[in-house]
Amino acid sequence: MADTILIDDFSDTTGPWRFFTDQVMGGVSTGEGRVATEGGVRFLRLTGTVSTKNRGGFIQARRDLDAPLPEDASALRIRVRGDGETYFIHLRTRATALPWQYYQVAFRAARNWQEITLPFTAFKPSGRLLPGTPRPERVTSVALVAYGRDHEPDVSLARVEAV
Image (cartoon, rainbow, N blue to C red; front, side, top):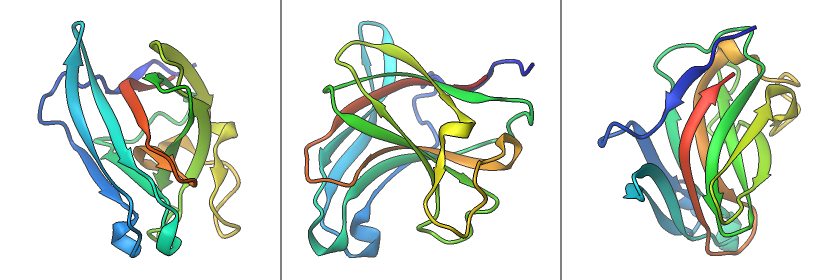
């Protein structure tokens, strides 16, 4: 069984998370991903406006991994809160060569902090060209994503780890 591998707990104030929107492909969504502290908890907060106009529909904060995950890891565990809406974790792997390729799993972000375990087997490929289930040792990045519908997201991520 895999040890717990910390991906991020936001203790580093500069953090390697990159924020971007569908504007990279002509969309009009806007927002920000910033590290904040509240009640002694540091977290990444993703807010903005997701618009499906002009074939858009996402904002995201992505972190490239410093090292491969253990091949015997079975899931990601996240500590998250939000506005009660559905959000996504996207994974990129060595198989996701094109910018629009990813593996995705949905979760509901409750208003209070909660831990959610997301098995790698639950992540679905964005297209038929990708293998069916991402292999943990091939994961290259993790992203927190507001996606697919017009809304004003507000979701916070305090911890990500592989288990």
